[in-house]
Image 1 (tube, rainbow, N blue to C red):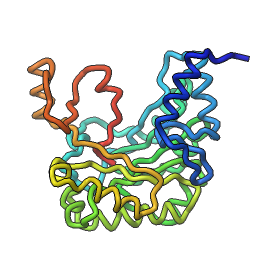
Image 2: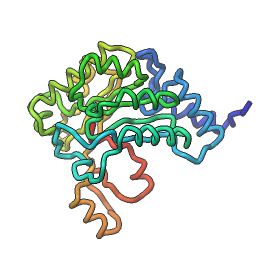
Image 3: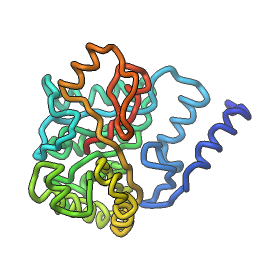
Length: 274
């Protein structure tokens, strides 16, 4: 049996100590970007990446589609080109990622719920990974939420940027987006067995007006398990071109994440979309 070094033990205890371990939806969770402590994927994570020091990745995300009914002003996928992977290609990618050591898999898009085979993909990934869904909530039904739970979905993050419907709808470029998000949160909560959170893009206006605390109080009132607050990440063609010409960015204004070619930027969580 492999033994964990004291230094590794101390590192991991210090890391976990930064969070409040929460029991929800049948899971003991540090946060939703780490497999739950009582999930088989957590055992794989410890074994493959902390004991065996596997060279491959522990986390990955797969875009299930480029299609999305919303038109967010800050969407970093807006100008994505290329052909969407078919289901068999996605399933093969899931298997290959698991073989490399991936223990946590995020399903994103576009709007991943628009992929008709999403439950099949979740079921395939859940056999070895903690699976998290990033969604606007568009097209979600009670039946689909139950299907995803039965397939093994561990966590969902619903996009919600403001407590005022008109501001959220304007940000998302679609009337009714706010109601769609609240409905998705409610459906997942009523389904049970899935950790439910919110992913929010916090604007400079909200920060400047001192409204972040008010927003957090609103989110707390929804009874969600966690929230992720993200800043816009410029990545449209104009920014990509400027970065390419400059070679590097020496400074950025507060609250802005620049998409550069550095390893740190490549590994940063992409949370300025669902």
